[in-house]
Length: 386
Image 1: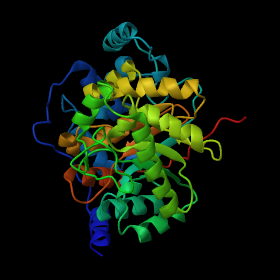
Image 2: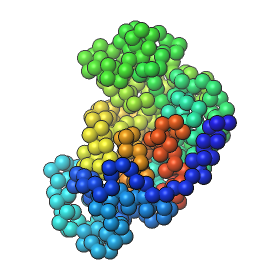
Image 3: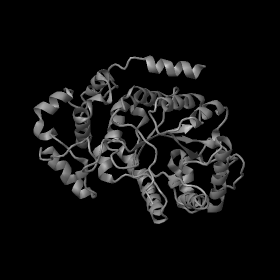
Image 4: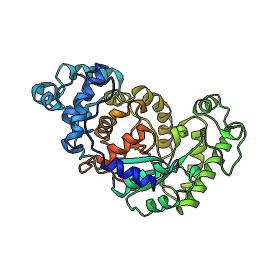
């Protein structure tokens, strides 16, 4: 198969140094520069092999070795403990000032004091069912236990029966439902009115958000469309989903989240599931410095959903990472390192989007395939003991 040949080619390709255009010797935002230096200089050496470390060196804004940074600047890079990350923006600015003055004494490898090595991180591959190459990459990662969850787009499952059966045979995977409510997808078994569709097709994300903010989306129609995709998942997989999410995270939008919560209230009477959100505190977003504006914007809606989930006692993830700029795909290895370094709380979630067509998907698949997860083995969602 063409997909198998593509996977084999990526797996056998030499890693080599990563040298994106216009990135070497780049002087970026001070917080971004600081975070890149810290991650490259203090992260676990076994996370990637030596060739990947050489690639990370090319991304340093000042172009010198991270190991020399650690030795020569021991006062600055002695330890940076993310347990000390504050919750308010004003405190975050003071933290950055202390780090820049060389007075912070914490460790980057820990999110909270006494936290074990990242043995409770959820690594979820999204978009299963959207394309054959994506399906094959996700199956390969699942067989090598590089991921612990898969988000399945039940509305787009066509010809993915063999790959889906392979996923169902993996006992270490959470299989979740990823709702699709945006163009170019079309509604399958339900024909909603103009509040969700235009000319028989779902709305683009921007238009959908506009209608949600103007309260022009019908909650019952949203619930019916989500219920139809839920039933499609059960039909294809032979079991209910372990979690609920959505393509482009539109389930966090107003009106749509109301329909989602109504559906969750109904299905939770007979099964246990959790719902994903994409909220992270602003200090974490700034210190991680990977697509901070997009993460902040998405987190505005994620925070509202997270608040509702906690009020209704619905399980959800405790942290979120994985959102990056597709245009900066040559730097994804460093981005993935940062996502994992910040995934230190129980049930912290990191989402990935592997594939063999778009360059950014290839970069994500290559990084996951060659990454050593011996100290960061992803796990399934852990429910609180009752």
